[in-house]
Image 1 (tube, one colour):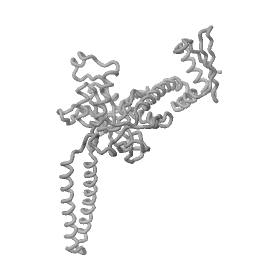
Image 2: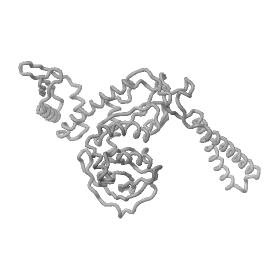
Image 3: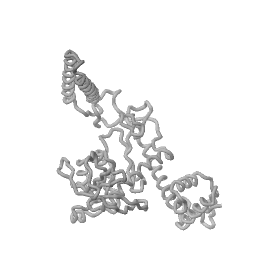
Image 4: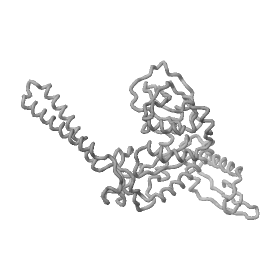
Length: 408
């Protein structure tokens, strides 16, 4: 959620979890791989939720660009085979979305919502789980076949549960019937790498930053929540709250029946009947009011607008390339350092440090001389990085000179 604090555009409000407030802004839907590296991003000023964006905006790009998908003949021969797997949070954990994804033979992994039952501890067995970054861990896992309801009929899913030391059971569901339960658990819990990606990009790449002033109209046929419907819905919720408080008051008076007078009881019940009548009337009005209307049917000063998208799209693309390049650099450095965070910090230091650039047209080389760091351990890691770069034998894209790196 990219919060907007300006006054140049009337953006819709939506809930921002990190602020615990409803604020104006734009929702960015990031698609990352299993290691948290960004693939692409979809920005939506007006959205109908995660499921609609996945089906309308994300799936077409994935179908066109995800490599190594099975052929149509392979899909026909194996009814349980999937093209690829998408992982998302429990916001998308409902049967209709899973069913529509499977119509394209796209498998999904997500958490199951509203789990109240507990499986017997005896069903769980210890499994070694390999994480996408190469590390391994042990988890107590169990699985069952089950079904979810959807508009097109039951959806067959595999439910995998992880038993924690506290006794809590985390429920995961997937339509990827061919995947081993250890891989299902690995991919679902590795989704936290995307949360880490968001935190890192906010701190070091300013992905929430406003890069361009100005706004533009949203397509007039776009559907938004009707302000009249929202006002009625808000009023009904307020009356429901008053009703609950009145019920509590009546209950308290019932416990004090010896001291509470008949007049007090009758007054409270009259208030309750009046509230019920008001709620019924307003519910009827809400029922007759369309929940969504087209933007162009709103008054000019109430129509949502969107921030100019091209500048943000361009900078997001540059930041994704930069992050992936940094991640590749970190992958080399962390072989020689104790922690990945140390490798990240060293990579950032290298990218902003000064260096000597020495072209040699006779030798057809372009030498980049980096200066040494503060510690010998860091120098060894940098030397290993430069040695690998030199082995890759890169050519400068404009001059054609062979790139050479040195630490001096």
